[in-house]
Image (cartoon, rainbow, N blue to C red):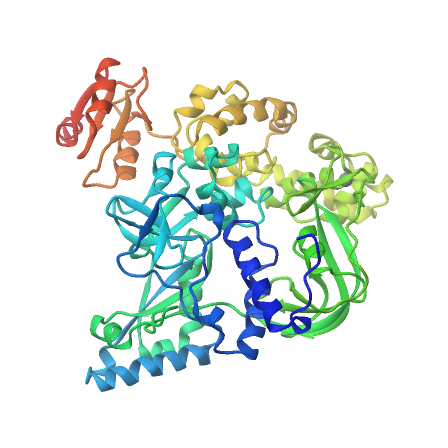
Length: 619
Ligand SMILES: [Zn+2]
């Protein structure tokens, strides 16, 4: 976008439709120009109100050219969008439409069942006839099968039907959220890319990018009465239980006869509806913008607005998402903006209602005055020693450790301004030192006591490791690593050792030992302070026919492969994901290519069937 986007009310209908098409294209290519809520609740809604029958509203949104391939695939049955509902009233109206048809069909109303599943926030696709295809325009999709060979996991086996391509939410939060604004953008970019970025290669190797068929989603079943009264609660439940990013829930009727009778438009099935979170909105004025620098150097805008009351709280600060958003929507001082708040979270900027001054993106970091540069949609401080980064890193340690509460932003700020800029030094401070920095006598004693308590109170070793904020070592991965290697030995960890742990790919296996070595002086100094660290039960040393063996499982198996691998690990084997010269045993399920077996045999690997393997370990 070279130019700022006009407020929706100032656009002609033609401009509005052109803009919606552009925004939709950008969204599907993984580089959105406005937030999802802004698209749905402002621009799309404006068109719906002006021209409820506009053809744009009744077409399946086309995909962007980014995923366009030469191989088009015609869908056997059209893949449609989903109609949306934001309130309980809209859902109740949907339930009533269903009941009316059920009555007509003379179906007993108390037996009508509805299913609620999470609405995955990824890329819709269909896997059938050995081809994985995007939804495309609903009729014609793009062949993206090559992504399976690149590491895309397909849950439910081959040809599992319709579903969504998504990335594990925890993985994204731990490893990618500091570089990519949204998990869906990351996935869309990766599926369409000719050459995968290093982050994409890594995510594929870590097996966290997955095609998930809708049939495998967690679900809640309920009757019409429950859905008419408790939809929000049930939707919130399925959404919170899903391990992938979601942007609402999907509700559908189970009965085939009802589905057939209700039918579909060109855009959506009438027997299905998506429940999305709307939140309460209000209009206020921007009085200033505060730019805050985070742990990774990313500088985010907080809009200081004229205080207003929104769903019971006085609001004077609103998140502006990122610098790109401020630039695109032209958010300047004096602008009238619409904001939204759902749940207890900080309210978000939805749209500019009336423009104010020209938006200004700062050229320097407000914390350290070093130059700041745009990277994708983000403004980033280029100074590694930036005081805000140092503060945020120290803050991260105490937040993740999570057993004391006095070391908040204000305390850390005072410490850093007194040149106490690393963790071991913080732990060396005496009450007198704290007093000299301006803390009161009582508080100084409390600070020392809390530091003491943080060491004596038991804390999990993976939490302690994750608290250092090392790239690729969030809580989940720290735990995975520490189940196999002791914390004290991590300075000698090698890439090969990393590769033997399931869940770490080539790139993380290479990067983690390097980062650990770099951070080791601080980690070892901290370890010397005798924190009371708890370890997970180590993988038990059992004597079994496969103890100490390197094993690979391949092909389709009756039991989930993950379960087979877990069992083998428990029996003392090292499970690998592909055959190499270390592999001693290859366990083959159905549909294994002859080449794979030949390769294993040429490396001297023993090849055995699942049945023989199960017989072996049951001895
Ligand atoms: Zn800075």
